[in-house]
Length: 449
Ligand SMILES: C[S@@+](CC[C@H](N)C(=O)[O-])C[C@H]1O[C@@H](n2cnc3c(N)ncnc32)[C@H](O)[C@@H]1O
Image (cartoon, rainbow, N blue to C red; front, top):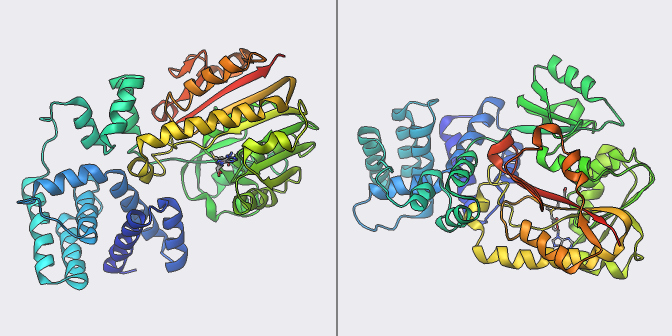
């Protein structure tokens, strides 16, 4: 693909992520498939799209410092400037003069000579003077917000919840690249054998500490392998694999997965159960539930019984005390997965958090009677926020005296995590900077009454 076409595709993709609030990883996948982007270009495209999105606020700070007045610029022009400055400042793959040349060509074709000369002017300034220094910004939250491209409300919120140092580390981790991690389907292939085969194909792999099924892929795209196509591997972040491990579901148990789509954890649990017993899996809509069926089919798992339902209505569907294990992997603000889905940090509002924590608690309240005495319930989210995590757990315990935090949860954690910074008496907050995973929260309750 010609440089011009590639840059044009990148620009279109970036505009779509902004306009449609689309998920960047899905848009990138579609773009790669639909335009048959060559392998060498695929890497560059992914790098520029993610990098530009991850650093949007920082790049806007740079752009605005070169504008003479509060000049309003069209979205596509701003996007073109963002992606060009991103390449000039953070990548050394393409020389600055080539980046500027391509940007000016695009500006000429999509706009007119005036816009081309405006784009040229700003980019030449960046080339000559460099980007402005942020160290003079005195306010810690504001500086961190600009330097790491997180909205100021979020930085302030995290500082008040976790302190400045942890927040800084978290924001910095969120602008690094996400590593690919896969889970082996152990009923089809052992982890050792899968790693051996991946090694032979030239992949750089290592084992995960989170799950005996996890493989970290340091280099190479797993989606193209036969192992993946034949359902021997599936993509799953390490922190989310910890749920399947800690639920301790055994063959022939009856399990409830109340918020299940797209089925990453349900299929993991089915593997742990050796595909024996039953998992009742729910999500809000048929379309979502179909995703669980699709994943189960790909992996050759047959014990997941799926149905659309609001988890808050399940107490009318199932008998009291009828489940051995329950998973509530709740809908959440997703602030733990910002590294892989940078658009989340720009689209979320602080008011969403309050609303979500209400729903999370309602789901827990309504499914609580369904667990049998002695059974285990995991509550998890892919977010980093006290309101949605520890506070929901605390409120649930206050109103359910028949439940307690299962202390063996902490003892059963893999040894390397037992002293983790995010462990409290209410659960385990995994920060994205701690193990290069998604940010994630999980805790395990035991029913005692
Ligand atoms: C974090 S995701 C679940 C991920 C899934 N457990 C996995 O491992 O693939 C949360 C899910 O909850 C669903 N959801 C939201 N509100 C719900 C509700 N009231 N009842 C059931 N599911 C709900 C969302 O559609 C979303 O698919």
